[in-house]
Amino acid sequence: MRVGIFGGSFNPPHMGHINSLLTVQKKAGLDKIHVVPAAQNPLKVPVAGPSNEQRLELVKLALNTYGKQFFVDDQEIKRGGLSYTIDTVMNLRKDIDPEDLFLIIGADQFEEFSQWKDYQKILTEANLIVTTRPGWDIPQEADELPEYLKALIAEYDFNFIELTTGRNVQFIRLQDVEVSATEVRKLLRTSRPVEKVLPLSVENYIKEHKLYRPIGEKVGDFEKFAEFCGRVLNEKKAIQVRGFDLTSLSAPTEFSLIASGTSTRHAVSLAENVVEAVKDEYNVLPLSVEGIDEGRWVLVDYGSLIVHVFYDFVRQEYSLEKLWKDGRELTLKDAAK
Image (cartoon, rainbow, N blue to C red; front, side, top):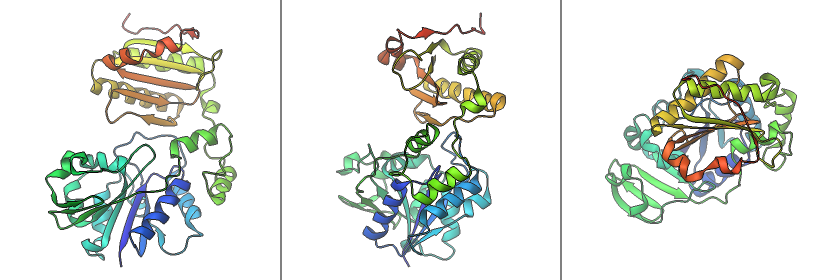
């Protein structure tokens, strides 16, 4: 049997996931795909959402009408802690030969694959199937491949690469469903329609168990919340922390904070400190965290408050404060002063 591995947070599972599974299963000729919800992705900051057990149930509901070719595999949930793909691969390798095992990842994950634990061993124990993602295309020629892979190429032929490890990489273009889990969570938290992006069974479960409720119920006063986050940034030596009340403007959020770090590492650290402090004080996780990989512009989204942390030189390029000049600037306490 040719067996695929399709992992992810599935927070929540949506039509983009299903589109990818159906397309890959058909085009790659896979007999079975293990759909593996992660306990916690080691490369992502935790965000608000259902429990591990609820996410597992959501995946089962999303796939229950598609037959036995999709098997919901709970091994990473059972292991708990940080989820490493190499552990899942080696567990399945007990029963499946490496030439028959296929790890399915998106083009965005393919770019950062060298950050995965034991990625070189993965490329020995399983083949890769790389799919397009909204905003991400597949490489058109060898020069466009990530640097970590170039030394492992034995033979390259557009959509197919033979590796020196004995395994191969296959690229599959999807008819993309323009949706991400981050966008779905925002729709759910603002009570907007989701029937085009979620299976009905998933939507019903979310409503029944009151998942993805607005975090404002825990935060309360978002102006005080913004002041708290601003105080954390100042305490961690952020540069020029400013806050804005944007309720009078046509803006995607009611309050916004902007700050700079002295380096990309410092910017990431500042964002992570905000997430940790808010979790301790309010027992709330962000709706999403973007840009944590590069640290040039990290965005921490709490719905009615969005925190922007820049590497200082990048901040000057965007000048977001100019967009908010007609908003009311908040008075933030500077811990250094």
